Length: 186
Image 1 (tube, rainbow, N blue to C red):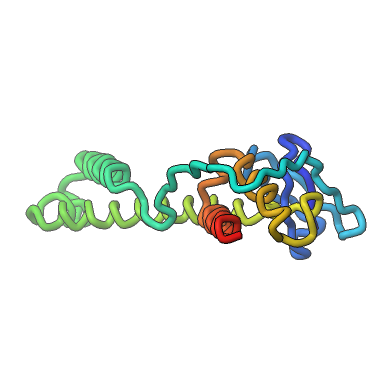
Image 2: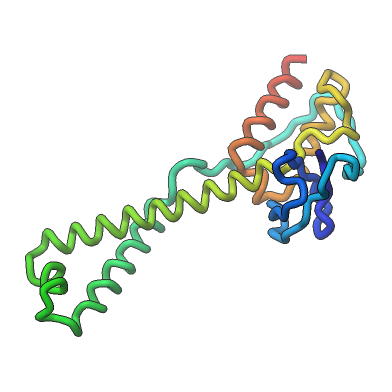
């Protein structure tokens, strides 16, 4: 079922498990309620442009699986330093002494622990943005029921009209590349 976000008019593809629930629009971030059944289906109407084999530049893709090394390292340094500084007033305590009075190894272990936590949180956030991108309607019905020589250009143009922060998802990039490959072989 396809619905349009009332805030940004982005066409979203929702599955039956979302019927009657609230979802977050991946384009604008606003929450919207999915109707309780397919009988209230809405379709976004956008003009379709048909071009034959235009030159498209694509866009620079980000790494979908790995987090930024400098950012994760920096956050880990800040969190480790903050944690160790918070322990200073409690010196003499047995638990505090485990972190502060046992040599350089404990400092490194504490840093690696916080670095691992930062990486996990950053990957969790990346996965959430990938999950939101799945709601996008990449193949709207108003462009055609099938992808063939006459409609592939309109489908590619539709992908290029998506908001930039949503275009750089794993699913959207794979679909764009597949459509462009199909277009180039025709």
